[in-house]
View 1 (cartoon, rainbow, N blue to C red):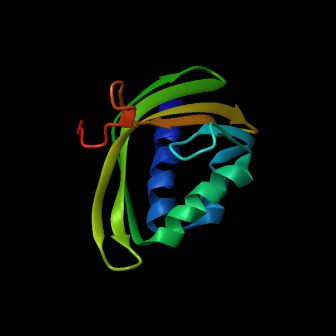
View 2 (cartoon, helix red, strand yellow):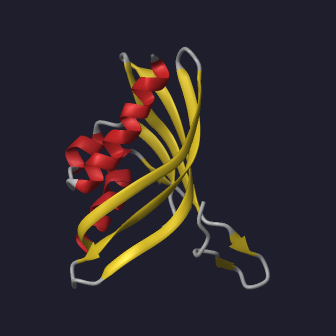
Length: 140
């Protein structure tokens, strides 16, 4: 049952991005969430900082699609973690379409007041060590 609840939370991320629902997205994170996102700085602390990143997505995209593949979860009584591949794509405000890039995502959940909330997430791309650049053309 807990795993199904957590999978529904991830589905709500997908839906919240599609509908550009910042308020709905905010309800999925703990107040003190720590996010290691692909954009600087190294960490974003607090739900307001996390939502600021999602708000930037909404500024750049006229329409947003978010896809999650291969979500694997490990669930305990009060905490859970999972990993998956995710891709943000859509149409930019200038009308250009993008297929986006696949990233690796890790979610850490905690049951808080009966709800599974994201307390930490990490998004990354593989690194080409010689060039120092992210490798963004890989697919799961």
